[in-house]
Length: 284
Ligand SMILES: [Cu+2]
Image 1 (cartoon, protein in one colour):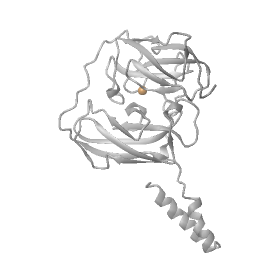
Image 2 (cartoon, rainbow, N blue to C red; image 1 turned 135 degrees about the horizontal axis):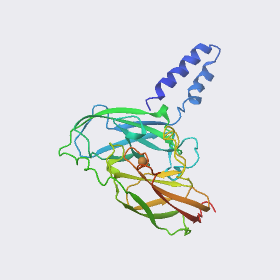
Image 3 (cartoon, helix red, strand yellow; image 1 turned 180 degrees about the vertical axis):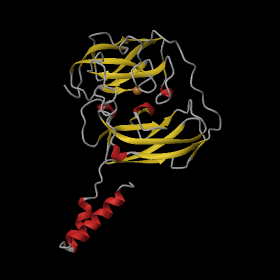
Image 4 (cartoon, helix red, strand yellow; image 1 turned 90 degrees about the vertical axis):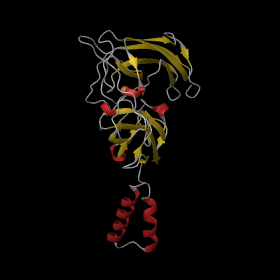
């Protein structure tokens, strides 16, 4: 961890200025301060690295932190959360997704060859960026074959989404699959964090959130309670193992590439909601 060295240096300075400490107790001080708190290193791409693959492989190493995506959307817990990645920016609009492993790929679709920046930080369960963990690198994107361009805009109006399974009121276990059907809308994970393209986007899946109440987007990414994933497939794996047994709502909302709800003039956000009865042996 790069952050560790300055903290140890500060600890040493503190010892020197304290003056009264014996050698024995001074030796114990760095041990007490050796925990720098959660942190993250970008192992690849390194600053200045040349990426020749179409998609960008990313490897991070987290320290003093537990990656637990099953808790995404639940209350914050110290030292627990997931990983946020932003490409060519620092806001939610450039978020490529959130990640649950230390190795992952970023889609090169729509990227121009040349310099790009990557900002990665740890996030709390409620999706608040832990700014003190943020790391940046600039890499040179030189794919040996050009990536796909952004798609041509799709239909301008009439996008809709439905949940076709489980059925309303179904009893479910903690691991389930949602089946969703979108019309006049194409979900693509490759486009997350890229510029908006009419008719394209992805889903946000929420537990126990009333999406009819408009979200304050200025607050978004400071916290997004109940948001459990940002998928793009019509079969969406859902892990409710960290949620208590009982009644819950599961909602799927249509989002634009910048993660704001897809809106059409005079209409609210487009989402579908079911209520399920969760029987969770992990939390009976
Ligand atoms: Cu999103």
